[in-house]
Length: 360
Image (cartoon, rainbow, N blue to C red; front, top):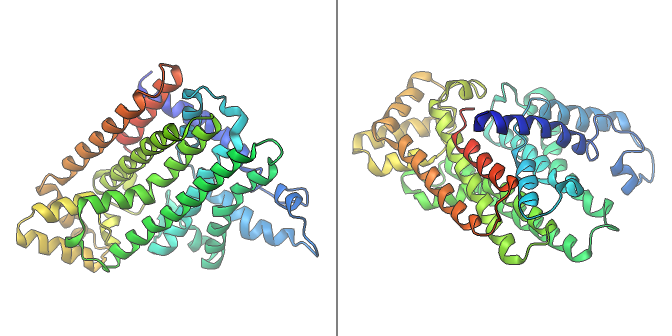
């Protein structure tokens, strides 16, 4: 079995386990016995129908579209590689996954996107108000675990988990703010540096991977230095994952179908590593034309493909692939010295390779 097939089999198997665990926090149908109401009992009346129609239904419609659930798998692999049984901490593995899906729902609102995973975005199906409120709920609900398990989790460990959550959620918002400012033209594309792009990715996409690895390391009783190094490693995975997402938006026909076609990031005026590289290397006429198309926020397929051709002319896609591979290689070298040889370590390495080289 090749690496892709093996990792996809593991992801598929664990996705069912993760979804069952998520149901503890956002059940497919709320009842008075649902955990959220047991932890904080309603004082007056409770409209369960409203909760189900405005939270549970759109939540599970969105999660039912798929998704790789790789962040919980990252949590599992880090736990195991550090000598800890992840089955004891399933509730913590779902924290970054629920938050991640909440960010996607919010991101679609902020970008006025039409499709997500091949279907109309949540706000287009259920309304803007439902989508915004749902994403908010998804940012906070999984942290109920600290209340639900307060008698079983040592206070120091719970404090560290909460600190990680707060730090990473703040970083997440900074990453999204930067991305929004860029595609709204608040910072000209020509002024964005490679380092700034990588930091935006570290905040926006690397943060939840980092959260997963740091929480797993804390659960495995790792010291602060190991928690930090595992977090940086996971953050690098997120950066490389985002670069690959940006690449697939330009060249991945199957991937792009789920978003509405090739170059939808161009239609949104988004600045990718390939755009940054092209603007640094391009002749003035090509640089001006690429910036003109980005500023148009056009859905015109001809213009989008023209922008892709300009980017391809300067070998920016190949540059991005090579940089993503370099980032992963360098970050792996650091954790390679921390983790002792094990099946979990090898699976972790294969997961990283799969995420960076995927085609969809």
